[in-house]
Amino acid sequence: MQELKLLIDSLWDDRTLINAVGAKEAIREVVALIDQGKLRVAEPVGDGWKVNDWVKKAIVMYFPIQQMETIEVGPFEFHDKIPLKKNYAAHGVRVVPHAIARYGSFIESGAILMPSYVNIGAWVGTGTMVDTWATVGSCAQIGRHVHLSGGVGIGGVLEPPQASPTIIEDNCFIGSRCIVVEGVRVRKEAVLGANVVLTQSTHIIDVTGDEPVIYRGEVPERSVVIPGSYTKKFPAGEYHVNCALIIGQRKSSTDNKVSLNQALREYNVAV
Image 1 (cartoon, helix red, strand yellow):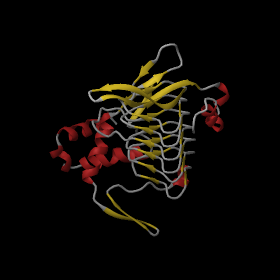
Image 2: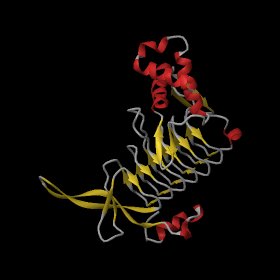
Image 3: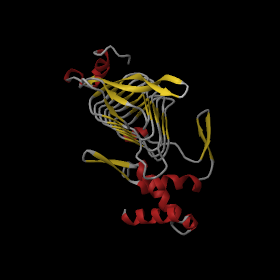
Image 4: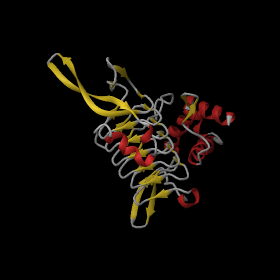
């Protein structure tokens, strides 16, 4: 693996080497290992995450070496450089038409894909449901026993290679039409109400104490989060700017996945 890493790094630094013997095969080998779940773009290490930037480099270089091809699936036709994942039954993944996952993503056994989209480099854990019209962007890391509700958008982060991907950790519930992008990390067991939008610049404000506590780029563990706004001064006047409000913590009664919706209902929040 170390030799493979060194080769990918050298190809990244000097793209003229990409036509050398074994270069394209090395790039394709990395993508195959990601597809099989043997390599990850990012992996949990202790309380944090380690980004394997050389793996992201291989994904970026995979696109120019691939040829456009027509992909026929029954009456449907696609024209792309990246093939679709296959052999779901053998891998123990439930896939409902018209769910699509690209080759180079990994879907762990026991996951469920409703009509949805999973991009290259992504990792989706067992017990997770990617619900209808939800999208998992390139290199996004979705933990185990997560529910991505209908229309959720998890953004991709492909470049720069050292940038952290968007991460949804284990046992999170992401409500309908939420958007999480730009490498935001939603930590374990957090619950996002419908329509929460999180970017690296979004104020994530804990309003449960006497004074507000502002987070950026990360939702603390077990937080219950809803959309909100705060007043900001501009040259033209004062306007309301979107933010996210932490209004409480998940209770022990809502730790079971089947009752995650209740974590929001306890705070009278839309799912």
